[in-house]
Length: 476
Ligand code: ADP
Ligand code: MG
Image (cartoon, rainbow, N blue to C red; front, side):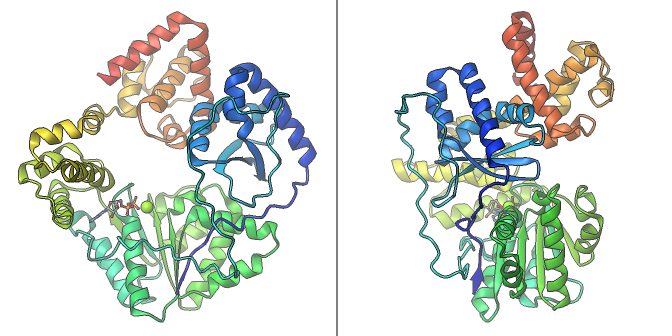
């Protein structure tokens, strides 16, 4: 049996302070409309509906994934700022795709004419049927992720061995909890699913796998629908509980607390816990101390960055499984060029294979360079935050240490903001990650820097030119 968790049950009752929220939202809408213009506003922003508030975070709902991504990238920062200005208690804005049945406030059409200016050719996410029984029997295991398809090498052999061991003998002393950690795309989720698949295949064990994010949504929904008891009982009835990407719970104190209790109850009852995160328990600052301590007291296994040898083995194995002949030269070329993580490596190979199948042409080094042109280019000029800080500090003549210092004099603060802005533009780092590199600043500080610089660039062409020049230098 596999227990997963679905989103469909998020049932949020009317917000207590619904009226104030609505009013704030109207205010924000009218400001946004003034800023972005009628057409933009009508095309994108009237589609937003108010969702629930959780602590200092408000959720805004969009009808499709496409719209959500678009609004997030184009207006996300501005929305946060405006909310924060109009309603200081709100410090963060979360954008989500609305599910059928989400009880949301109707979209606010400020204009009398509510017809859509542009129709968006994006299919809605497949409507999910409401669960008939409250049993949450949703299979969440990805069948591609098994031990058989996992390629073992130096960087991951220890984590692999631990995962195998847990799959063979769940709840062994010393292996509970199993804590897997490592950077993105290195196989944590793959290993967790492999454990689940193996256990389910042998039968008679109930396995629950969910991301920490889902755990949180589910928990919040349970609180709101006053069904926390059921939620707890469901979780405590499983033999193996796996929670992926635990770092997501950082800052979500209530959810951490609940996770901790469930965790203790399960371990005390002799059940197995498997957890993954991007850092070791001791480095997960922001998680409660006693939770970190408990997490670290079973087996902690690190998945290291890939080596050239492992990348080659993975490519060989995936190429062989695809049935397309990929010359060794091409595999070596890819393993040299794409070093970030397995996910990207796999993506590149898949594209090559799809291309070969589509056109029925053999894979050659030349074809590879051609087909993967954009990916390879992106990997050629990967700018780091350190580089950005160095170049910006040089250009504006400040000390490199001031990038992380607490000094707030304009002469220092402005270049620092520019560096944050460029870090956001040129790297794939998240706001919190960027904040950490700038003397452990909060992500809202980074957000503020990004919008401040954008604003200044609009007002001051000379400044804009300076920043653009900097960007081009860093990109080349
Ligand atoms: P993480 O959860 O650590 O971010 P994933 O488990 O999602 O990473 O892995 C990303 C992709 O790379 C998946 O498609 C996974 O199957 C593949 N992958 C990662 N490591 C390996 C490996 N050692 N062998 C085969 N595939 C791997
Ligand atoms: Mg993962």
